[in-house]
Length: 80
Image (cartoon, rainbow, N blue to C red; front, side, top):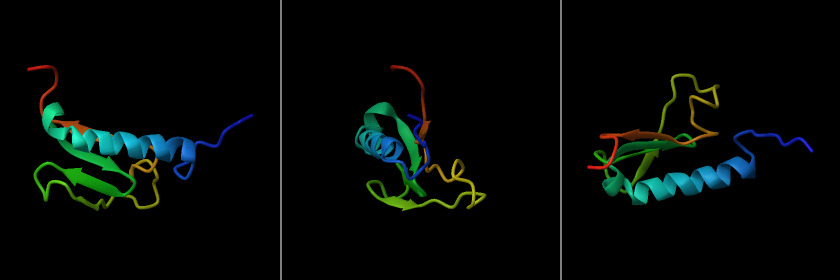
């Protein structure tokens, strides 16, 4: 059986959504600045606790819109 791994696939969206929420909850401990997923972004500096609309440079590109993956920006890497 071949699976279709598109942004609308539950196999992708469910785990990605769970991961994005997990990262936001632990953002302070992990020193996370931004989380982007599903046309939305969360920022530690802009209204923390709220998701905002994310405007990709190409609205027709599912990858740039972060529909099939979670993008994370960490301020510092490694344990401190």
